[in-house]
Image 1 (tube, helix red, strand yellow):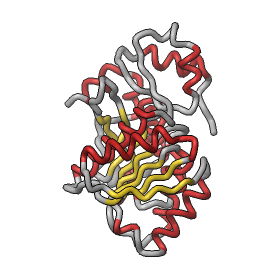
Image 2: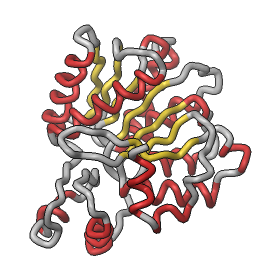
Image 3: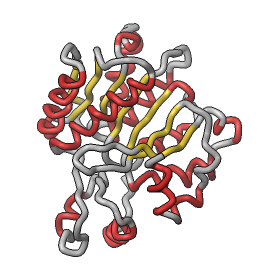
Length: 253
């Protein structure tokens, strides 16, 4: 999995005058350099706050669809117990009757693909409103399985955290029904995803996409990227990543 060099990540964070969460597979970079990056707060992919934020994000996206989280799929690795437990606990606050079907897929894209494919083939996916993949490999496997079945018509919310952007990998597949998916990912504030959209997606595909920044207020953590099923917002062009203050202003609209 490709990553920015540590110094590039640090420089990126230093450019932004906000308290924020940067979800990344290399949290030790920031731990080692926290003296350099003062006043910033970070979460890793397997901690308690990550699970809480995922639950909040899932709840908010379902709310836009006039749904509540009643039956949710959770893909995780056994090392992610704090994230797993926090996600379930937070969901129960939003909806006490929520049922979470959890699968241990390790850190493997293939296992996630096989698991979700089995759910789809059994005709059970319609019973679930959304899914949280606690690491990016599993999020990608989920999306691949979802997109492999062209008969799926229902909208399905996928929350993915950590790693190389789920959104980028999704777009690189070039075979997915984007209009039916909502993917939330918090990697480098979506800069790469914005750039990739402009470079590789046709105008026809853009008609089924919207790129916007979603402000999530929880303990002063903010800035998440959402790729959704609405029309592509022309004001979110590839040049936006050069103007961080503009991004923040739009995110608070």
